[in-house]
Length: 536
Ligand SMILES: *Cc1c(COP(=O)(O)O)cnc(C)c1O
Image (cartoon, helix red, strand yellow):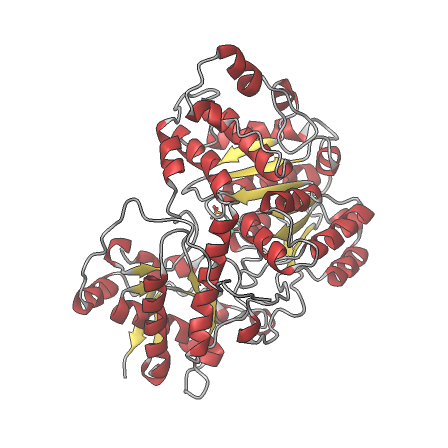
């Protein structure tokens, strides 16, 4: 309960150090820009926008500590200094809870004692966790840096596919998830596996707006019963990995509870299947656990993250999300764990992954990243777990959803950690907008045209409703996403967006239907086809 002198707003956790001016672009200029870019959100020049909610990926404003670390980046080809710092920052983040070593401070403080640098940074030896160190990383590599999340997915699935299919290339394998992200799903398919989703049964249930800071139904959870039945019906041998995405981006960015993670871990253990996290938003997910799950109120964010990762055998991650970095990704698996055992029958799987990593992304100590990126990321891992930051972040997302909801705009509640979603079917209720009129796209075009705000349709246009069978169409949600970049916007920006969306909602009958004017059948068409709004 709130007591006297307590405020129900978060304490500010940061202030601006450098600002960027927004250009004064007129509506007529935006109309020209829209026309010339075929009304495609992805083709519109970002510099001409007022607010950009297209993605939270790689769009964070970094902190002064990250920028300071960048100057200490080392662009050496082999074993740059940031490599050692980042590997230990990953151990700190995912395995050490509050017992962090922060060896980054040796470099940030200009340590010159060579013995100390050798003992504490360059020659330290680790084994048994997610990041072997010293000679163990050479003999049994288990940590792979790559430029972004999808590269880690590609590395993983393209390396295990030929191993699984060596006897019979026609064998069918399934990868279950609580909700595959689109690139994960695409990488799984491209390597000949079948992705399967086990969304939580309560995903589309209504939720009262006045309860959103009081409780959370963890709608990102995996349907564990569905998973169990699926494994039993298809046979354990057809399931090389189980995946769990935190937070569940595809399911409106909803969090996953610790209880659910443990239940999935129990299923994985029972069938001896490796459990991997798609861990992009681990810190935001940990904050939801702390805030809403019983037993976690008094635990620190790093402790919750440590517990969460103790239940899994490996993870792929895009550090462009919670890493607060603009670039970076990785693949990690537990030294001599289930994954290692299962996939090392004819040679160490880590060595195979490393060979592929070198072929595609360069030397394993930079993995397609510059030394500056590596330092920014290492520093970011310590910034993103600060509770004051996470509180402000999640509160901002919640505030955005609450204000829209109070204005009558149908948003998915409760909001997840990184984005708010408008329910397009409800938005256009009472108008003659049909699913194949792409109302969500029409809305996004008008939002950009009148107000210079970019959002993204994730519905019949993005998921290619018109190219699918009636059965396939059933799983398509009809949403517009506003992904909120980290540390970029403040209340003024959110209020401007809320006012703009509300104004369009109140004039929804004027929003145009949209035709796909070019490339309706193109692959990943929402990145590349041309559109035409039909104004009455
Ligand atoms: C962004 C994202 C990815 C892919 O990462 P990229 O860095 O964009 O390649 C994978 N999974 C989830 C859940 C994501 O949000």
